[in-house]
Image (cartoon, rainbow, N blue to C red; front, side, top):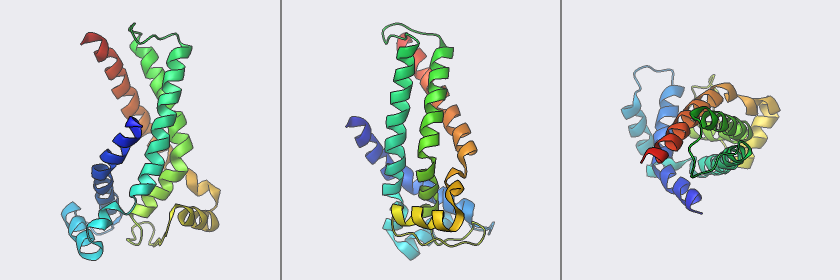
Length: 180
């Protein structure tokens, strides 16, 4: 429950930031920076525009964190790592890498929906405009128009990002917790 609460609260900050980044990257007009994106959202959608994909983000990060930590802790147990005894950094790195890969692969279809919901109606993606009403509506439309392979888009880049971020941060966390 505490992990899910943390995701709910951190997403109050992270989702608006992510929407600003995604929309700034989705435009083909180099004059439109992050400040322009913020003003545009406020003018056309109001404050709620910053939370357009809040629940979709929760639908990605909740399962991702659950999967990640289940796999991570399971692998640590498999390798005989005990919380009171420090293990090799390589063991933590390997467990975290595998956990991030599993979590990323399983949640990528929802992440495709999340990102598309963020840039909904704002072009930049090959001139396409998306008008998704819900997660299921987005999933159905993506499947109908592009096929099931569309849910794998961005998987390699996302895997590299999360493996690097999680493997480094968890390895450092595990090593530092034994020092302090």
